[in-house]
Image 1 (cartoon, rainbow over the protein chains, first blue to last red):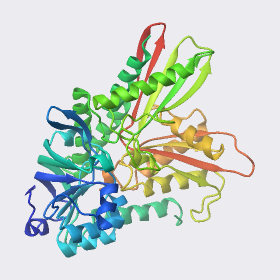
Image 2 (cartoon, chains in turn green, brown):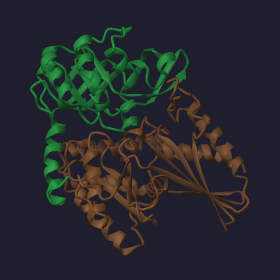
Image 3 (cartoon, each protein chain N blue to C red):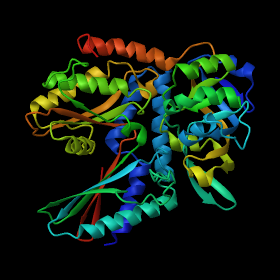
Image 4 (cartoon, each protein chain N blue to C red):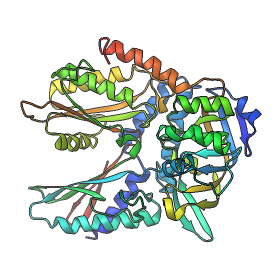
Length: 192
Length: 289
């Protein structure tokens, strides 16, 4: 099991191999549909994402004295960000993407080119993952995007995930997809 | 009877705890995988997540989903009052953190923070000769809802005709397409026949059935068994990273159709099979699911 701590170096990220389990610690940023579209269309990011991790997540947060508490925070479907992800990696220097379900060819190419890795968190395991969030360090776009779509700054400890897309051109999701397609065609008599 | 409190408690139970049959199915899936495999690790994490959410009364999944209440009430019941109680319960549960701020005004893009708006939550009422009010809540997340689909047979691309084998091909195709989107292992609710709108409602209703039951019609029960077994040969596994269990259950119903139409409607549900009910008779509540 590899340990990754923010800020994430290109060297550490390039050393990871698809299928490996990693533990992420330090600051991560949440961002989903609204943020990706905004950033890819040239919007200015109020925090530096360089050498950072972008977590595809809309958390359940409740206000508490002097701040916020995250009660549930699992990954959302990453491939919705496929039209924007490669540009966000290139323009903002993101090193780690955390999400679920994998991403497409453009993201995979950007991962290899700029040194970024895609991590699969346990989809829907929101209570378990929320336990790994030590505190909320801030939030941006709360008014414009709403709490679910906002950019949250989270401090995490030993947040576990599986490397789904590495910098060496391996994409576990594509491998499973290709193998399952053959089975599907066999079951459906050559069609589908 | 304070319906707002009862429905708040129903939301707490639904959002933070899976019904026993769903939890058992996930445990069995975890045990079926080699102990050191990625699939076993992911499934064990899901089981641990359920335990934690239940212990803390926090959401199992951050996407607390579309809330649909299915009601069966005695004839002549004031359903408007029950619907109002459901809206109040949703607003209260959102304040508590049992529900995410999960409703967006489609035109402005603004968050509707209370989760209460026209058609939110959804209530379906059915009147019956019964002394009790029974209500089931289904919380269905967006990742899985995006994978729900309707086929119109025949479908030349799939090679699916207007028969049971054509339906089978649609269902396998749906499971295959859902990888990477809805969190596997999932559950399918299916309606064969009906019109388009009714098809989606009937398909969604099938998701209230326990994973362990089978359709009363022998040909549908056989189809459920066959497609479940075949879907689990696909090897998609938990989260699409490979494994033996891709589908936890498959529930099919048939409805009459027009001669010109043959719809196969599929409601895809992720592993977070959040359905619970309560039956209220007189002042007494019995929790279901």
